[in-house]
Image (tube, rainbow, N blue to C red; front, side, top):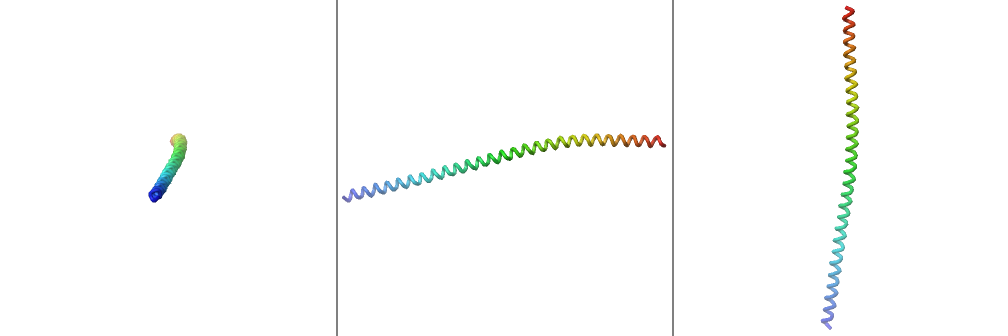
Length: 100
């Protein structure tokens, strides 16, 4: 009878050990999946941030191109105005020279 009781205790302890190992494995894989999901979420957020910064960069480049074109137009106008000023100065000089 003692042997049977010992075997029952052994089987009970073995079942408890298997149950504990199964529980630990479940916890381990759950945590692993959680960290994987968390990493994936952070990766997705990083991709979203990268896309946002890429769009901002493109918008900034567009803005720069627009400003560059506008600046070129203004430089051309300045050049034209400077030429007109120079021509007017020459006309004034010629008129002064005629009057002398």
